[in-house]
Amino acid sequence: MIKWSFSGLKQFLNCPRQYHEVKVLRNFVVQETEQIRYGKEVHRALEDYVRDGKPLPKNYRRFKKVVDALVKGKTEIDVEVEMALNFAREPCQFDSPEYWVRGIADLLMVEGDTAFVVDYKTGSAKYPDAKQLKLMALMTFAYKPQVQKVKGGLLFLLHDVFIPAEYHRKDIDALWASFDPDLFRLKQSTETDHWLPNPTPLCGWCPVNTCQFYKER
Ligand code: SF4
Image (cartoon, rainbow, N blue to C red; front, top):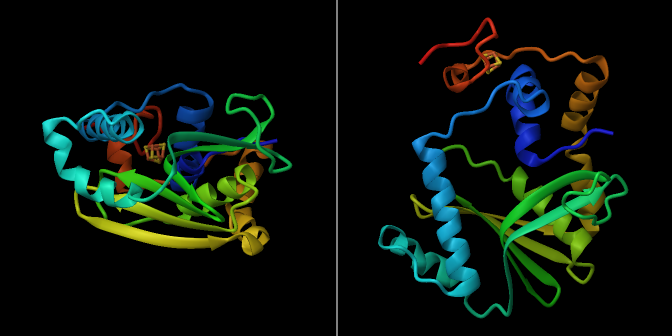
């Protein structure tokens, strides 16, 4: 059985070889760039602010207004929510050997039969990928049986851009099916141990220096 997360699947689709070398074999580590560090700091600050009311550091106070608006009036609010499903698509422990897919929701709120899932982004808003919200919605449906509708959003904090999405419990099968082609490719690569390189401009940020397409920075 393959195990996956949205980010891992995305890495595989971008370059199977990089995914295998970095994620599976752990032969290389992706260097933490300034942008990655900043993203982690912002996530931590917002987590502390929403969960504990800890004041936002001066640099991040500009995000207060938009986050306040998101949580306003909500009673059930959780941050950095770890969710994992087994192959039967039932909730399991995040670190269970049985897990099939897992992910972390930055902000998850529930009001009656509606859940709100938000993912904070600190990068460019140019190419939003709402499919991540689809997976979060599916996991929310599994974890919260009373939820019939999930309203999701990618919040690009530095650009004041919010990409909304909405999912309904009645569409669960179709929503899962949308991942099938990509998961089939991952399964094929795993079973045949075939991990093709896929050179793109992103090679300039890749740590796999044994690849013929590696570019020194
Ligand atoms: S250098 Fe490019 S093609 Fe090679 S593994 Fe890295 S991303 Fe893939």
